[in-house]
Length: 487
Image (tube, rainbow, N blue to C red; front, side, top):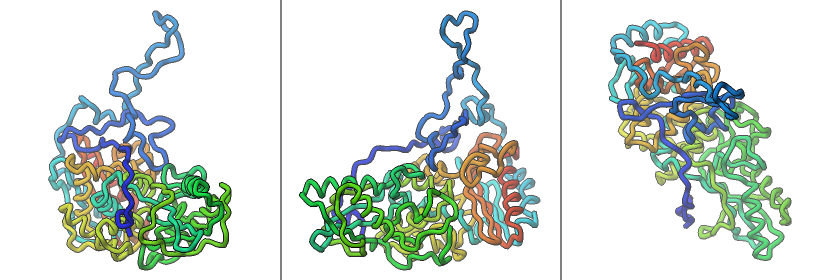
């Protein structure tokens, strides 16, 4: 049951995201002038997308000495050259690359045996929609984690970038009982300071609940929990796996037993019960006696919350998911898309909802299957043309709600799953943002890159049956770098 069905009103939200990525032809400039030592990132949230990371002014910082005529004030130091100066204001633009030139470069790279026995490709100019190169672009293949691009686009289209997921405490049906009511927030944390950044907080929720109980003259309660918002199997078809926790509507810290925020780690087998026990302990710390052990219970349909906590806005969840290839967030977003579509919040409901939302965006979903939101399921099928179609939609100035699909993509040589790929002197370093995909024998890469003429291009390369995963990744990186470097 969703918030509106429970009669809860939406909390007004402050806009926390800013649109900056897009096409030069549409008058939107990509502008990263300086990468500071601290970096432009904070727990998967791109600070440079919310605050100006660099100034367009002609001067730089200040030195620490007194130059001639400086008096007692430091003088302006010369500005360092921009990391992405080639696409800044007034940058000279080269002639646009001809499709035949790009094809001549990509064909031999696609023929690399390291890519396996099957490979498809699509490269599109996001400003015009012109197909610059394609090979098997409509052939559906197992995409691995590049399917998260589809999950992100569907969730944003269904809910909008400022949507927040609510976790609440409501009175239970039994006397003296309160229930922790899961809404499916994948950013929910039981830690006093979340290592993953902003999100729903059981600590804050416990404090607010304790205040409400004391104000009502209650100092002793039993605690239950309701995670019935999600239906169907809680285990991903891949089984017990360190890459994903059981998928429930109530999970704190992604079921991780440590302070990790991404990557594989053994997860709890009871995320809902563990979250409820953590909440009960936090209540006890705040002077509320908790009797008995937390148990699963059903919240009354008309229950009004005593307290609530809200997730990171959907835009932030999408960015975190794409940057770190977070499977737990991906499965949560597929279920939130199902709920927004009036469908069961299950693997099956997510598949139907994502398919419908993408079709409504106007992309060709024929032959596609979204068996999960994360890409761990080999039954997933998408085409490289579908992925570039979604990336092009996300770059469209008329689709600002989809922009986090672009801003969340890892940056080559700098962030997330691309930190060590196309780094250093690669022509794609800092210019390429892409989602990686890796399963045994499956390697994929899809994202955007600024080419030498200053255009924002969308690309997708899907491969299968590779014998050497690292070698396949290197070949994919060469393909992406070639798109960036081809004149």
